[in-house]
Length: 491
Image (cartoon, rainbow, N blue to C red; front, top):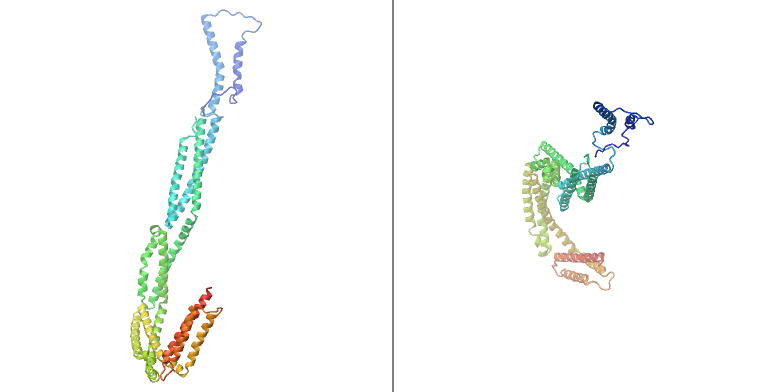
């Protein structure tokens, strides 16, 4: 602000200081009274010098109050650093300062928003490696460069103008206001871009936050699962069971626990989350098997006893197959019993193999090799099931042959009823049957008639008759199923 000398009419100059100027001059002017003539004697050189000195002293006394009056306002104004009433320059300074304050507020808001968004981006980058996440990170970097540009221009505008300078001109203040206002507008525009970008991150950020929210509980579940599995294994061993295979499986999870303890910062959030879930799952399996091990041992003991009893019973039943075969040979043709000739020998061999496997299973159980014991017992069961079927087949064959020899008509009527029922279904709602249905049904009728013809003669092949009627009924059943499927499907 430029210092200007105070004016006589300025409020800062007291009127009492101006009055002595007029009163000091009056005695000079009133030295000669009007209407009265005074004759002065001529001045001598010394008198002239005294008169000049007197006039000079008088003028000095007259000027002192005026100088004091002029100097006093300047003294109160602080040495002339700034005008009290600045006019146009001061108004421009105030507007420029307001623009500077507004730009500073916009810069602070943009910086805060960028910091918050950076946290979100870092969250996404730590969790998500999808193309969408990588694209979001790249877009954020580009937006960051845009923010750096407008921030740099704002800082340049602030540094270029010293609004506190004493001699700031109105034009300089106006330029400062213009540049600072533009800087604020640029900051606001970029902040709006930042807000739109933040709104678009919603799905990615939600997914990332969900995974982060799952991370700590998942790691804790894995740790607790390992602890529970270790405790269950100790309990089993305390009861006298070894469970070496479970101990080996649990020991294999130790490196995974080490990686979990190292944290997601080193191994990544998705990898750590997947590892925690896998460790918890495997530890839970070890714990469940350890807790079930006493029950499993008791179950194996029970199966050993049960299968051995069954093997002994089959040995007895296999001895009864030979009398059945003798009766079949005596009463029916060779085709009725020829395929059963090896049943006694095959049954005896199967029982012998089953007993050997039972012995091996007992040894595996005593050594607590639980998987081996279980596998051997499954083999024993399969051998005994096969033996049971072959032994039962001989007795069942004799029973069925006796029934058809006594009354073959029952088997014939049963088969004919199945054919007629299928024929009625094929004709339902139609004038002519579908050839796809009629042809196999007609063939079944002819096949049944041929089977009936084999019963004539002195030595009918009853077993061939039974197998043919069974085959006819299977064919008819397939046709019925086809018709129902097509009509149920809207064909």
